[in-house]
Image (cartoon, rainbow, N blue to C red; front, side, top):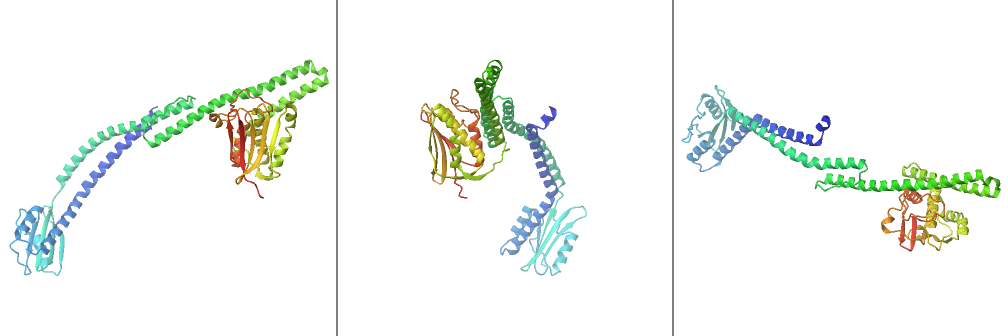
Length: 460
């Protein structure tokens, strides 16, 4: 539990924010302490250069102006004429270092040279430093000196201030990170709990909006998953009930007729043959159920590969309809067809065979009292559309989206006139989606339903 707490988002967010604040302040501290002297020196150089240019190129500048410049900027200024004499406006501020031997050496060396500018840092015996700048122009020689003071005291003050600032910032960052961590992690913790509940098959969790896009998107995804899993759970229960029923009925009949054969029918060959036929039919029903479940499983898991070929689908439809002659004759069903002579399709013939069988079986199971089933293949725009229509009760709008789900039945008391497993439409859906054929159903209450799929004619 301890390791999980340490690795939680709540703790990590706090740690990251505090560390970020400390690194930021230490960076500022480092920059101030190690670059302050360099920045100050560059600033002073630019200052004296700009003052020298102002004096040099000003036509009416007075000595009072120069004196004011010197005192305002804590610098020494001397102006020489072309003969090397010091004019009357040589500043005499306290601590001015222009009259020392070192500065005089620089001054007179520059005056006697052909150089136009001189820029030099002078170091004195007491470790004080100063910056000397000289320039010649317009019959004037200007020298400006500015001290580069020892800033150790300033550095010490900055260190102390930054130290206090770091301590205060740590406390503030802890408080802010606590607030932010809780703001971010509280909905995440709630999502985690809801996800755990979903894993425990509790699908009544409430997801509330937080205003954070990523978290709200995650909640929406989990909410959708919860709804779908709730449907799956309901379908699963329905599946178990229906499979149990479909297995129980033929097994019960097989057992009953086997016992009858053992006890009674074996004496009468005609009755015996009839009982054996019934057992065979029920075994066929079981086989069909198992095969359909296996086929659907393969289709859903992409384990069944399509083997496409070009063939005449009209011939295929007619062959399938012929196999229903027994039902048409025995139970007075009517198949009304509207088919062209030939239409070629490129598809998996065996899979499309399953689709047509399942759609016709579905229509026979749900058609009305007139026992009519309409089968057509017509060209609509650029596509051919295969339709199977019944005259039954129809399907409610809210149920249409669910009919393709395995073992979903909108009418639990429908007749089973043909062998059916209850997952026929699921197989139809998977096969048609693998072929990328458009499919659907149009239905009106008390006016029947029309199941269809579309495909493009294969020219060659």
